[in-house]
Length: 361
Ligand code: M6R
Image: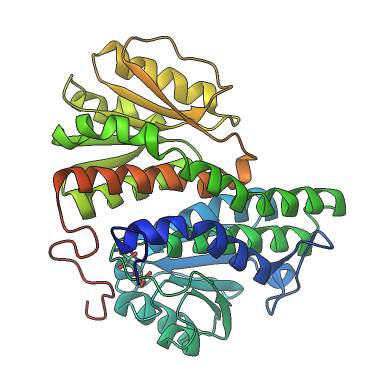
């Protein structure tokens, strides 16, 4: 039941400190500061192929940044409806990973079955542990988000990201890329995410102060670099799904290759700008938007420098380790979509035309 909340989506957003904590504990040991051993020998894997749809696809893309950076493991991520029909060339030591909340999405399941038939090792990151994908894959990598009722995925997404980040640490250790001290630091950083997600939930007042403007817009741009790029696409998807406002997520560096032509006074840009090694680059992209009269909302920690430019509004996010930024910054993405939809009076939990589980193609 919804309890004190107006919508299941709101309730599920607030459950994330627990669901992320629970999911991380599946893969990491808080006491020893070590990644747990799991059924896959990452040292024997040469490539990872992630297949997924929708929000799970964006979680997969965030996972990819971590598998490559922390484990030096080449990782491809593809939308399952494309993967299954394009006769992909896969090398034999590839680990195929399906990511899915329901474990029933038709295209993702078909891609998993195809990979298995090619003789690949298979794993499934799924939230419904009795699902078709859980049974089909050799290895089940569970997320512990609990039942998700809202059609727009929130806590299942952060649980997928948490699982993939934790598995990337495990892969880095197994492949000799991460030593014991680094492992302890990364495990500690990951276990800080539930507290920082709880802190991010307190951003709701500052987010509510911008939704009136957002609700009036016809188009909204989301920008980010690194793992914030797939999160920008997830933020745009969430907004589209429940507020019916057209939104696009872009890599901030792509701005001048096209989307900057859309910038005008009526088109807000939302930027995800944690203090990481590409912060300055993102900040300079925002100056370019502001210089063209586009309203900018920059989500960044309070101690991040101010980019010069009229029209740049700031929303403060908790400062955090770059590894967990996708978990922490997912919260303002969800809150923005949620409050904008509430402002517009749409059916948040049952958006038009959408089904919770897409079991037909
Ligand atoms: O159950 P799955 O994770 O496989 O579902 C995949 C997508 O259908 C799902 O993420 C969809 O994009 C959601 N409506 C996102 O909010």
